[in-house]
Image 1: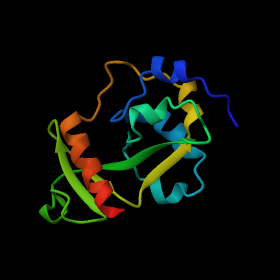
Image 2: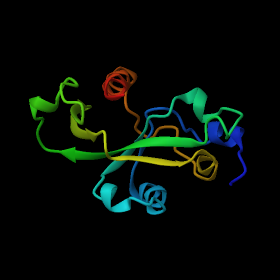
Image 3: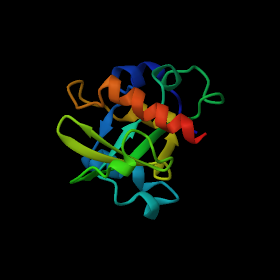
Image 4: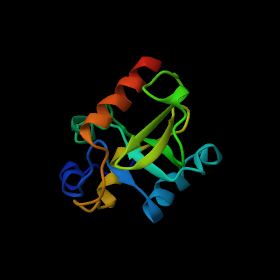
Length: 140
């Protein structure tokens, strides 16, 4: 298992709601055993809680979890407001996203210490993140 460096995870700007795109998205997804299930994702959204990201124990909190999100052109209101337990459509800052409960990525949390996120990188606004997590919690 990769050595855990909590300080580096914090310094590398990993927080709940972080949006991951481009080559880093591909890097994080590439080692996933169910890659074909998530390969169409346009971006990743980190949904692990901040305190879990820096938990001292890899035994207690071994993973960081992401939604594999698609950008879509139009909201289907059957999937808005968390009405559907498997999919949710959400408009954030003028873009429309589709979250699918079955398209998530779980990686070794310590990997985050190897990758730095720009502090000005886009993040899901807190209000939208609360809505996403409320929808997620209703499934379980």
